[in-house]
Length: 301
Length: 312
Image (cartoon, rainbow over all chains, first blue to last red; front, side):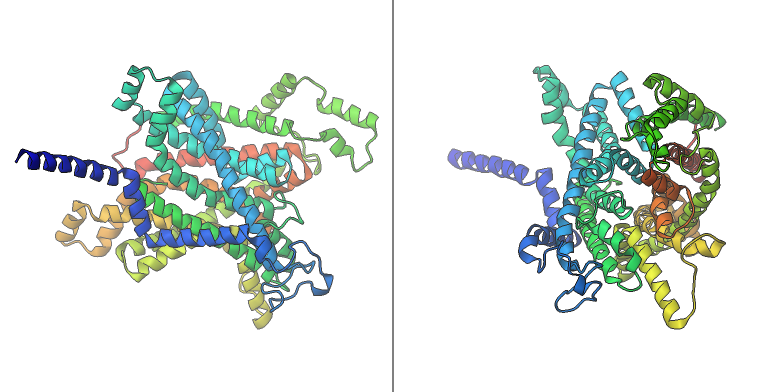
């Protein structure tokens, strides 16, 4: 009898810990996300696009920069499935290689924005006082600029080029993270676990990194995901204006810019790179929406 | 209310100071010598460049240059354009109206499409209508606006070639006709995010008990939706509108360039390409100020939409 009670008690305990582990917020979120068909299609498209970009050297039928004047401005055909541009370069190959640049630019720009923004937000929210005021006034100043205008001004200062575009789009994106993280820290730092950590003598940087950050990271992940889409759009806009990635590098925005003059005679030069931008941005948005629904349905981003 | 507006305007002053400072330092760090750029066409000799540097005050220490810039900026003077040889403020005054026109046109388009799609989707929640609206919305958000611009230009010119009619003018300045296509292109992306927000906000409100009450007391569906539901659903939407206006203002940079329209956005792009510093500084400053004023208007409009909000 006692043995039964003991074992059943034990199994109840096991059951509870197992359920607790199974029901961890991340796991619940993951389950909701996996069930979200739209988000999963977004993820699938994104994986395919990334694979195409990574495997570009193996898949691309032509060298993306190989000039072939004999076949300039050719309409899509069997030899060139998406046609050729002014210099006879194969558009399909250029789109494959362009994906490497566009997707990486999006990721790195968001990496810059998120890492700076999160640190600023953590410091401002955690320490408060004068530090908070200074950081948030700086953020206010950056917020006074429409984002693309800020990126444009920074690129104007740094000069065109791949690296500068990433930096410009990244800096222009800092404010979103700083504000979001600061707001979350302000409410999260009132929790008992923060006090407990303080009592046992945890240094501030550990409290910030180990205790606060994991608790507020959910909305940040959602913002960052959706932000990759926005960053890709900003970066390709800059390239489209001729201030971003410079020719002859294959980049989708720059390709659109090159095709502009031939819109009437060779619309495929502009059609397909634009479609590539839209599909990748769309897939990231679909995934980001799903993440938001899974992590926090009430969030308004 | 008046006091709130006063206070907000006062808060704007340090932010504007920050904006001016940022604009100054961004341009100060710009590589290249403005004096050399100005004289480049006339084959600038070293002596002439040095003389011009002295005239422009570029040889002064940084704090002196900064203070001079600041005191001129306060008086609305950003100097003369390097290439157009006109006062920057005059160039801005000539170009700003066209940009405001475009931004407002785009806002009208965004509101019209966004609200109709959002309300429709909320009322037909979980039907194919809802799904179609939301698909259009997310596609609108994901579409690069310069690409949409080129597609529509191609379409209109193709119709023109085949049928010999130009349904709408695409490029350049002119009456309201010239405004239609650029406004649609610029407004479409915003209409997408607006539709999504209107939908979720409406759905939340439609679940409230006062909606059931209103219906139960015999009010028509139309009145309930427009007067009871929509007005309450507006608040989160208006909050976003300020941010979206910033997007529209920034978007004019691209749209004006694609459609060869005159405007502040295009002025900025051209000035950046030509390294015409004073114009970039002035135009960026004016755009930022406009954006801040719009956000203030948005905040004030909360009180009109929701009388529960009181500013003290």
